Amino acid sequence: MVSTIGAGPRVSGGEPSSRLATARRIAGSVTDPELPMLTLADLGILRDIRLDRGHVIVSLTPTYSGCPAMHEMRRDVSSRLAAAGFTDVEVRTVLSPAWSTDWITAAGRRKLAAAGIAPPQAAPLRTAGPVPLTLSTSRAGVACPLCGSADTEQTAAFSATACKDLYRCLTCAEPFEHVKEI
Amino acid sequence: MGFDTAYEAISEEHDSGHRWAFGTGFTDPLAGVDTAVPAEADGSELAEYCLMLGDDALIMSHRLQQWLARAPELEEDTALANIALDLLGQARLLLTRAGRADGSGRTEDDYAFGRTEREFRNVRLAEITDTDFAALIARLFVFSTWRLALLDRLRSSADPVLAAVAGQGVKEITYHRDYAAQWLIRLGDGTDYSRTRMIAGLAAVAPYAAELFEPTAVEERLADVGVAVDPSGLRTEFDDVLAQVLAQAGLQWPDAHGLAGVSGQAGRHGVHTEAMGYLLAELQSVARAMPGATW
Image (cartoon, one colour):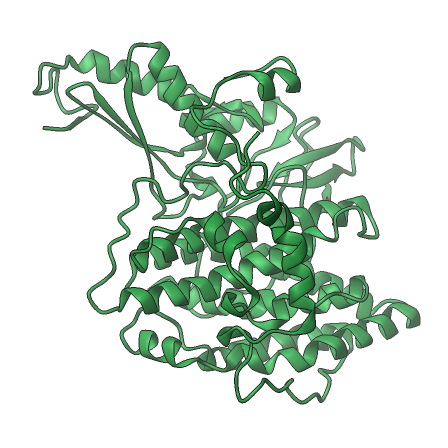
């Protein structure tokens, strides 16, 4: 019998639900090595956690196909849970639906902005027909995380990690990173 | 877990296994994913299809990696590295899926480092060398436009693993195509010199375009049962996107004949250009010199 958090005060198999809550808190608090201000919970990639007679199953959704941080995050989930006494941990990949920056929580967005990284806007809505081309380089409405000005421009479409591009503020002149909408 | 220094991170014994001296040493990218072969498909044909799409990504990624520290600006180095990384991630998923589908249990490393040239199924466009940055931009634009149209249709594949890989890939390649399209316009609509180079880049790539739309028998059979995408159906969308970008760049698509194969066989059948052997020699040299080496 498998139970997810919120299924009731106790789950069958004699596991108190507080153990599941503890496991969820630990897994959710693992941070992204490339965006260390964000936890897995903030990123929205912790999709599910289950506890069945001591066996913990953690389900994660990758951000980008090739994101090397996924390997570190999977390993950190296992080692942090092991340190808390959960020795039987399985980390599963959930590929569908694909991750979207819309899953970054409000707390995650605040932490990004506080670290000087512009959080993503709403991901583009997919309409019927072919994927539209974008031939303009700057996305309107990316506000400078330092001074708040909306007068910004993109300086590079890619950045030090797969999930970000580079902007500069035309008001305060500071360069900053922005999490790309996907 | 966090580390205070990079040395601590690589010296601490935090992994149960060794790291590959080559390859990734990463965890199974399909851990926990149901990789049962759908009833409609033959497992070995599904595996071959996964190798086609996986090899396109792997070989294109390798060529992009060769641009690192060679691109005209640091920003372009970073862009090409990120695009290469996305494609490498797609390749890892698809090659791993191939080993599950054909029942052989081969890993991504077995496929990437252990196959000979004739066993690679990528289109020839992915393997050719770039004479300059404009030729790379032409190749990346054609490749991304075609692959985006393909993966967009593959999102509804009867194979849920292919559909999921495509769903994520579409988001990534949308950015790759925009990047290449913006550069194509900037160079084509730039100075006389940049325009001349961009025209030459398109001419270098054009003979490899026809192959992208020629289905193999495996693709046709799998497309009939809803697992694969028949690439011959991608031509209209491809031509539309090409026309939009070329119009803004003030350029024409060159009037080029498709490069012939050998007895009708080309990249999808394992018949490659001369460039492929050199590419594989580099990609596989450490793995072949020291099979199974770890550090």
